[in-house]
Image (tube, rainbow, N blue to C red; front, side, top):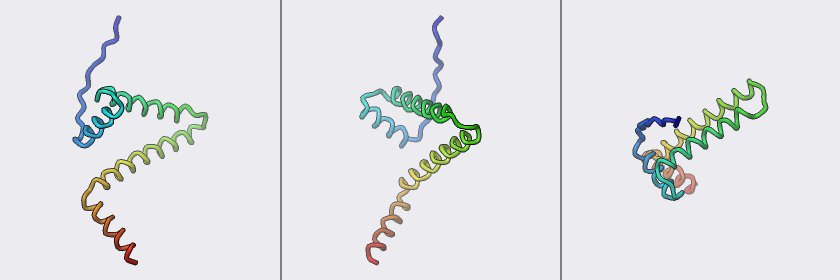
Length: 99
């Protein structure tokens, strides 16, 4: 009996889709393959972390830390995409050079 694969439509923000398409092209993959590769890699990383021999408390703390890092990374990426934030960084950089 063959395994049935169900489709699951996913909506991406335009900038995420564009990024994934660029990475797929760079890696000589289809968009579908790029998405599956990235999801699989994340699952493997999660399994590697939870598979480490450590007590439950350490494992939980590490999982929470990884989650916080991923959230912080997303916030930083969004900030850097913000035109106002980029302009503020530039102004601060020039102000420091003038000192």
